[in-house]
Image (cartoon, rainbow, N blue to C red; front, side):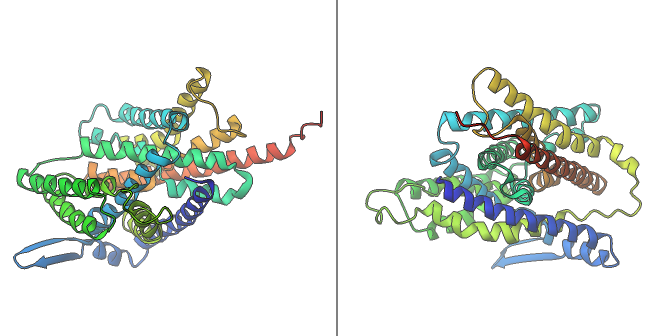
Length: 401
């Protein structure tokens, strides 16, 4: 990806992050206002789509979490594929540091959560909740600091968050799938093969991909595998490069066209709507003591402590052993500030929490843990990066030789 394209992407993510913050505040205020019953009623309002004798009917929040979030995962899959093939993860040198940091940043938070929940198999299901980073929220915090944060650090955070998303996708597929339906899985497999065939044939039109993707989504929804993974499968089938018979070199690839078309819808509608539907925590009757319960404590400390320890330790080891180097023009203090921002889990953490728990009490605890851990990480990361910027301004410029 060219540097100008990265800057455009980060600018859009920053704007989306600010909208995400605003939607979260609205959800919290709404869920604790006199209009709270309307908020809860809207979320469970049944919405159905019927064609002949076939139909799907779910509560509104499930359409958001299973339907709209499939589009979110479609965009995530497109971004992962592009970065791996031609972007910041396309070479060993570029991928090494964010890859190592992402592994540490997923493993240590999970271990922190497990430490507080190892005696309860039911709550242990949430071990993956603090393992993810919310790129839009994190980049939104960076946007508040403006040019005081080096571009190299922004690119590093982008690459690490994309690695995190890939890890979260693997975790969801491997650990949050239940009660498989063989017939629906068979239909999903046929749709996936059809998508692969379109890719092999170099089909540039997005219409056949979207039609097969819709069939795939319905089949996956009915199969017991979480429906959002259909978005990832569809994304990996969209071609980045096509045959030489395609239009000239100036014509954008199907992947670029779809990514460009989806990004504003996901950033400025789907993710804020998800936050609006999932961040509303009724605080009535909740005392500070609930934060000491295993679920919220494990999540909050996993995000705030586990993320920074995992990212910093993995990075230090990589630099120490010369497997990788810090981004050019950055300091360890700046890097520590960014490692704190990786503890902003929000969107993906809430999403995994919805998969791990259905009990309303656990759901509230998940939301509290994610909110506390993410807000603490955002505030601490901002403070450290601001101090690092001030220190850099006070540092005397090198004298001429």
